[in-house]
Length: 280
Length: 311
Image (cartoon, each protein chain N blue to C red):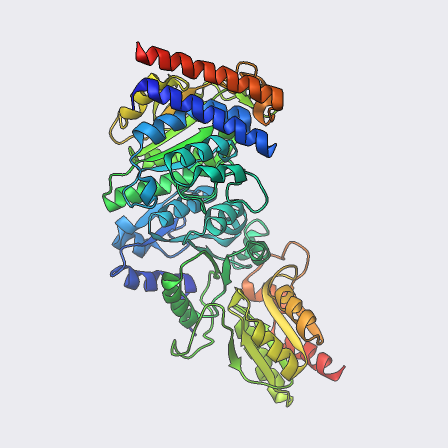
C-alpha cells in the first residue's frame, strides 16, 4: 500500500476501535490509539501473512504482549479478513471470543496474552524454533513501556541476544504513560534504549506514529546480522484524538456519545485531508 | 537395590526417542547436571536449549517452541518450576493449549537439608488449580520410562514431579499397562485401600506387607496421575474396601489426599486418613528421615490402618 493509503487505513482503524469500545462501554482506548500506526504498518505492509490461511507455516508471527490494547488488533484483524467484520459487534459481550485480551480461538491470534511480561519469552521460543528449523519467518513482539518493569522481559532479552535471534523484533510502544501516571513517575525506565542495547540488542529509535519511519525501521530488519532488533517506537497515548492525547485517564476511559462523535469528526477530517493530498 | 534415579531414566529414554523424533527438545535452567540431562545436551545440541537461571523465561520460551511444532521438555527444579513460573504455566501452557512437558526435578523433600526454599511440597496443590494441566508422579524407574514414552505422544501440558535419588523398584519390569489418567492397582486387597503416588507407592506397599502379617488384606493403588484423576478407581476402592488412607510427599493441603477426599465425600463417603507433610516448613533431612519424622512409613501406616479397621 502507498503511504497515504496506510495513513488513511490507520485513521479508519482508530474510528473502528473507538466505536467498538463505545458500544461495549469498556476497553483500553489510549494504548490502542497509540499503537494503531504500528499495527497498520505490520499488518498491511510488512508482515508475510495470509488471512485465508492463518496457520500457514512460514507466516510471520505477531505477539501482542501488551494484550490489553487488543481493540486496535481486533479491528485490524477484522479488516484484513481474519474473521467477519460483523463479529466486532460482539467485542466484550457475554460469551464472545473477542474478549479484552488476545485469545487464540480467533484466527490470526497466535497465543493467549494479557498477563504482562509473557510475550517476549514466547517470541524468543518461536524465533529460536525458526532458526533451529532453518525457516525464514520473523517474530514481531509488541510490548508496552510500563510493561518493561516486569522482570521476565529481561530474562527473555538476555536469551534473544544469547541465541543471536536476528529474526526477532521487539517493539516498545513508548507512549510514556501508564495507568497511574507517567512511566518515569511510576517506575523510571530511562535510558530505556541504552538498557536494551546493553542487553545485546540492536536498538532503533523512531517516531512510532510516523508511517514513513515505521516502514523504514521494519524494512531494515535485520540491520545487524546476529542481533535481535528493538524498535523504540516513541508514540503519543491517545494518538489521533486531540482531547485524548497524553491524558493518563484515557488509558481505559470509554468515550461517551459526545466524545465519540467529536473523535469521529476529527478522524474523518484527517482522512479527508489525506485523501485530498493523495489526489494532488 | 536400584541405583538409577528417575531423572536419569528420563534422559536415557529421551536420548533413545530423540534419534527418530527431531522435534523433541530439552530445556534446562542451569540444571542440565541436576536434571541428569548433560548426555542429552552433548548428544543432541540442536535439540537442547540452555536458558540460564530464569524459570519464567524457560516456560514462556517452551510455549513458543511448542507453538512452532516442537515437543519441549522443561527440566528444572520442581520448587521453582512449579511456583515461580506458575503464571506462565497457566497462561502460556494451559490457557494457550501448548504442548509443553514440565519436568519438576528434585521434587518433594529430596533436596533434603536445603530447607523450605528448595523443598517442593506445595507444587501439586498449585498445579491442580490450573485447568487443562495434567499432573503425574511416576513411582519408580520402570514407570518413569513408560511415562516418558507416553509424554512424547501426549499432546498437551503436563507437570511431572520426580525425586532426586534412586528409589526402590515398585514394578519388576516395564511390562504392564500404563496410561496417563488411569490408576494402577499394584496390590489387590479387600479390607482397606492405601492410595499413593510417586515415591510413596513403595511405602504403601511396605505397609500392605506389614498388614498382611496381621491378616489384613490391603489394596494398594498407584495413583500416578493426580489430574485427570481416576475417580472410578477411588469410588471402587471406597465401595469395596470401606476405608482409605492416602500417603504423599506433599502438604496435606491440596494434594493427592485432598483430591481423593473430594471424590470420596461426594460419591461414597467412608472413613479416610490423609498422610503427608503438615502445615509447616518441612523438617530438613534425608528423604527417609523426613518420611520417618512425619510417619510416612510402613509401620505407621499399618497402625493407622488397624485403627481405622477397628473403629
